Image 1 (spheres, each protein chain N blue to C red):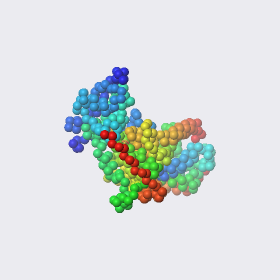
Image 2 (cartoon, chains in turn blue, brown, cyan):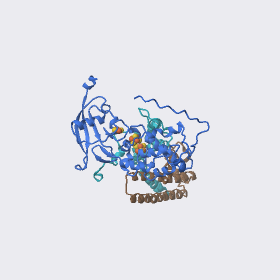
Image 3 (tube, rainbow over the protein chains, first blue to last red):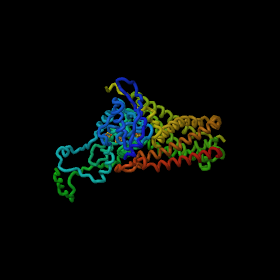
Image 4 (cartoon, protein in one colour):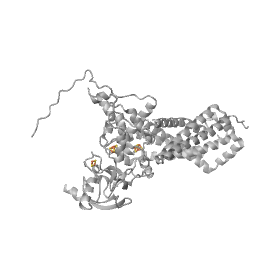
Length: 275
Length: 123
Length: 145
Ligand code: SF4
Ligand code: SF4
Ligand code: FES
């Protein structure tokens, strides 16, 4: 263990600074940091904030790759700072900048709110036509493991915005929804319990919509959760084209009754209290 | 939904171009397949040009190719320009202009293809 | 606060990427550039070819201009653009119609993405482009016309 710490590297960290009260445009500031094995970029930022410069701003919450608030450009690649170890990226210089293609609030904090707005507008929840059943459910909506697999990958999205920062279309087109919202639209469209495919399809197939994705593939390259938004988007295009020709199989599972031969497992006993 | 239709036809046009322009390349650049170039000498020699112009099949495929390329090219151009984020009024105007230019070019090309069928073989 | 934000969109530079981006990113930008080039060529081509309705003399005159070596080179460039645009385009059609991106799968680290699914296709397309361009170049230099 001690050997490891002895080998600690001293690296130069360049941090993009921007104070809306003082600066007209972002500027760069330089720090020196002692890096140890296993230290994440987020750890490094904390270290600098505690020991060198209390004014730097960055956003984080879970520090374990779950909440999606700490995305930033790490040596030119969008990534989660809590999920990236410094020594995996560099042994000499580390450049940190806020995620581009969003407005910048302060230092490393990008404003993700517009993306959340787009996500909200796409009605990303299970929508069904059988309103009565939704309000007074009589049975569960059964779903086979295979039906689950069709969208499971896309549920892992944590809305960190890394894909949005990498996408070339996002760089210029302010009306393009972006990879994360489009992938989420497909996540619900591919859900066998959902009934609102056509409505959501109309929303994304507008001008500046899903067809402004040209498979540059960057979103999937950088996604820290392996969501592969580019795949979701192309699969959704396929569905849209099929339904344009009237060939789409309507996959919505209206089946909400218990299948005849199904039996419920006996209730699982809760483990006894230990304290 | 409208965009799905535009885009689907953009793809269909692409496939049409792939086939017909591929044929065009063979006819123009690989003269050993001499069906469409009876005269010896270059494919652009008048005898060959006149022969191809009079060929019903080639004239027909050229008109289809013309329409497909114009649609495919202008839709692609429109996509690129739209992604630059111009104002809505500019976008609408641009679409109208592309339609007009496209139709005019289609008119010229089609006229040429049909008029050329009436050519005398100058031999 | 909100009114003082800095607009951090990359603009058209963001199309080009650079440095550490994947190869598909460059193919995307090349597809755009070759497309624009071909469109420009095609518009000229419509007019140039329409000269034939003016009769053999005008045609011969027009063809004489095109014999110019600079234009011969231009013609070859168009051929290169077309081969790339066509074959990369076929790859993109297969991808964008959801045929070459695989199925949704559980993300297990190290992540694989649809980019891995389409990569063989990309390699095949690019090898074909190279072969066609070399063959076309041979034909232009040593060919009969
Ligand atoms: S798709 Fe991936 S990169 Fe994009 S917001 Fe979701 S988790 Fe982040
Ligand atoms: S695949 Fe589409 S959404 Fe993803 S980065 Fe490329 S253009 Fe953007
Ligand atoms: S702090 Fe939550 S994802 Fe990094």
